[in-house]
Image (cartoon, rainbow, N blue to C red):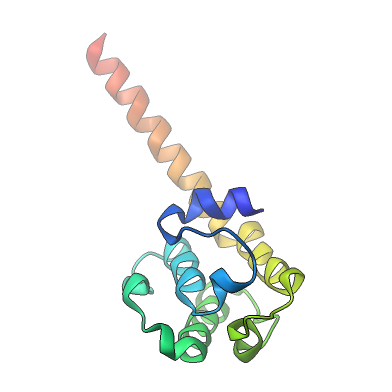
Length: 121
């Protein structure tokens, strides 16, 4: 799953399922990837507003992507958060909208490559 996250949001530089999720930026980046324009400023979110950042991202995920908040924002902001809790929550993104987004992206990229190949023939 870590490999998937690193591919989906490489600019977030995720290396674990604990402290890298504490300030809300990674979750916001994931929501932005699934729903472009929802949290476009994720990379400049104030780290001191972790619970607020996480709450906002979870709210968008629940309302727009139908991904339920499986843990409390306070828990996710805790540096000693249970790794499996975050993995379980993030796996919902993998099985829901982000998977569709990835499929759409792959389809678009494949179509573009075919079009380019036809131009050069």
